[in-house]
Image 1 (cartoon, rainbow, N blue to C red):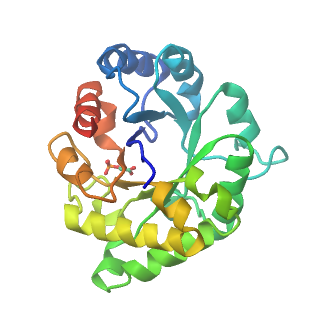
Image 2: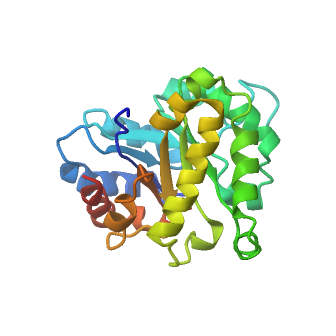
Image 3: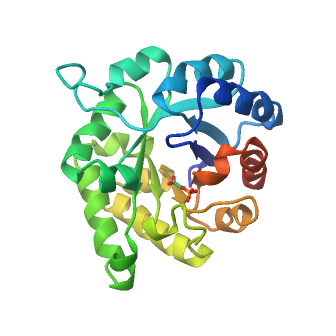
Length: 252
Ligand code: PGA
């Protein structure tokens, strides 16, 4: 079985000015363990990317964006392209976060185009999938995850599937303080890995799959101990350098 290096991503969402970004990193970077694992990625707002990249360049922390447009350039007012992110030194990009699906009309069709565009530009896609509360209660979780994973990765060649990081984020657990139980997280992640295996067994063994949704310092270790949980995408708790450092420690 290939070694899947743990992966911890901070999703700051629409938080932190450049000054707040500097303040966070001044506290957080000295607490980054001096080991190759876990990989640590800060998903900053567009306006803080440059500051974060400059401050992280001497560290092993990498910086990600939270969205991108699928075209390289064009008449798309207010949008940012993959080559623009790559030019800045951005390492990864969150795609398909449920907040973008919910509030900004992000579709599986668009994601099917965005994921290969990110890979083509040298950006690591962090693809988010997950069911809402009604879908979980209606026993539709498996169908929803299957539809999202199959559609969103449809245009990625089998040989590159393992370069995508997949984040399972049940919508009912995001920002609610209601975390999936380790069993629920494991079950969903095992399903997602089996969906990748339908395309390529090799990719399924190597692909990193994260859990996201109310991950905190006090529940991270338990969630991360599950067999298929390769890391976490952390929202609220990643805004505090001490809390995020404690979650990084839990993954070590
Ligand atoms: P949360 O957010 O940790 O605040 O629940 C997770 C996410 O939306 O990525």
